[in-house]
Length: 154
Image (cartoon, rainbow, N blue to C red; front, side, top):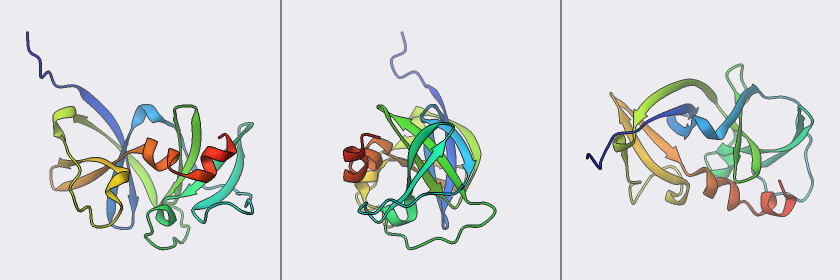
């Protein structure tokens, strides 16, 4: 019996600046155009606010701010990726999100010691696909290390 059997995964690719990031498709509930967001005083700077998304109050995180990549200017391509992990739902603002690819688990390499653009705590690994380098996000770390989300009960 083969023990290192390859498992195919689908990942959603999104961009922040020139970098491509990936998250497993099973954690993504939807991809939306950015809607009207209500600011909430006293929250962390990367919490853009909340919105009512189909009856669910959803906190919205600006990933550029979260990763200290500078502010963004909303364009026609800007998207909010609604994710859910361990009963926490949040919207993640990305510069664009329009690609879904299949990868094999053995393509995921450990996160490098020095990631360069974001804290390695938020990276679960990297994937090379042709000439593309995709940074896999550790969504649990991104969401659950956010004290404002933990205290809001989101």
